[in-house]
Image 1 (cartoon, rainbow, N blue to C red):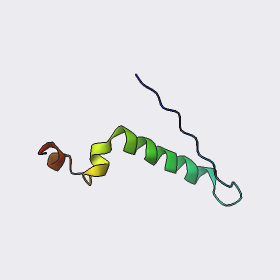
Image 2: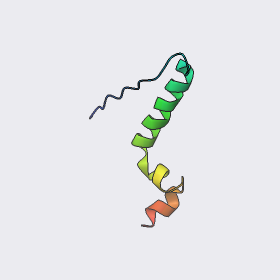
Image 3: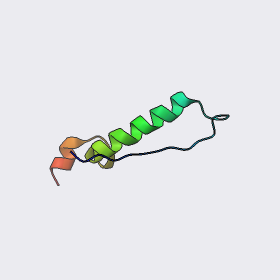
Length: 49
């Protein structure tokens, strides 16, 4: 199974770690399920292509 490492740099004085983790989780989910991202979560529509 291929693995990709992602790093995020941010200013800890401005951004809390909780928000940065949430952002990385959203990026991970988008990369794992690009059809949902590209088709506005309409998987049925995507399968018709």
